[in-house]
Length: 396
Length: 146
Image (tube, rainbow over all chains, first blue to last red; front, side, top):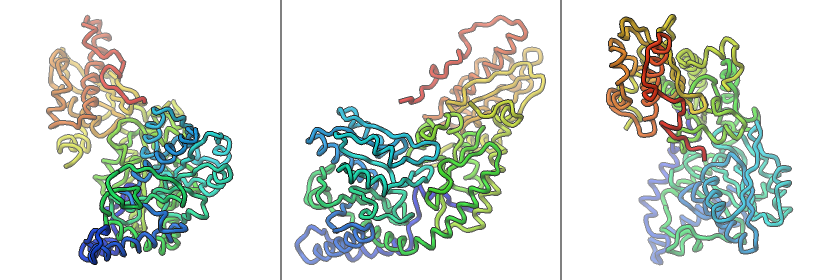
């Protein structure tokens, strides 16, 4: 049996999204900046996609939607813009959390080197930051609060609406990296008090290399890429028409079926949690309930994550030990360390992220294979015996 | 391209000589759980010849594969020969390792040496201390502690 359980890394494009992409290649190949008919035909399709995405996200106007190369670019542009315009008013304090995606964390580190003060809030054992923490951290010189909507490794959902309300009340810009949330849980920039939002199409069965930066009317953006008047002058480069049109179709389709898919996924996810919890010395990472319907993350003490993944892959189960973006690194996940897990335990993590195509049989397969592989690797591990016979409670 | 060579995958999926050894003549443990790798090596030595070797490893696929390969490479060798086993030879025998996994082969070399050192210590055999691991992982591979 072949099980793809790494949808948080990327999803397979839906047939309609693929169709939209090929249609765009054939019908809207013109340059939207050209004044002739072919160009203007493309321009109309581009603006229709923009309007649709604006509406689906609860934006006030299509002018608030900027197409980017993906979530990382959107994160970079949102944060660097807020930092630059904040500094003009003498505001150089930025609040975020310890377990953001590196697209956010590395951008913040860059700003720190430039003299900005970055405060990373604790996310507790639950993997959830509270609006009170944000409120307490706010200062008169705070330029930006950036908190991810749903965590990419453990799937916990943050109280974004409440955090947004705290920021709105204080008059501080609020950005959210919603890459793992859009099309997975209800997101509305208007209702959630969001000033800026990043999203990426390939996380919801759309194409790779395309994303959106939503920036509320009146928010100033600085360019990361210079060279043209595209995206209202804020992002140069001829628009990636096939990807943009395909993204709009994927978003519409996913949002239309979100309720039904959520119900199905939640049942399967809960089966996974229940089944994997039965493995001794295992733990579910992040809050049990406040999480996206598709993602679970477990630690199994006494084994190392990469060995687990390779064994599972050999058994037809494709999963991740955390973020695919950091898999080249030997260090344990910064997300799991942020939850307070010791290095020794954080090494043995497994992220399973399912989607609408996942079947009950596949869940059964996962629940049969994972305990067997964990046990096999533990028997090979020199640290397991001490855990098993109770000499040590943990690997610390 | 696959992450690992076929040989690495073979030794990872079908590790040779895995398990504990009762009454081993030399036992060595290197690495630490914080770094994500621990190797424990057991040797059975008769008349200066390694007649059997076993290992237990906590670590990634290449850590398991290098331990397995190292045991195969030293069984039947004299202790002196085993001491010359280099991490490079283990890497070559496995048809290569990704750059960020080379430290696993270093660990395998050190595990063999640590077990031999234990054998020397137990039997009152004199040796050059500089040949052996000083227990400081940072000397062989650096972790990004930010």
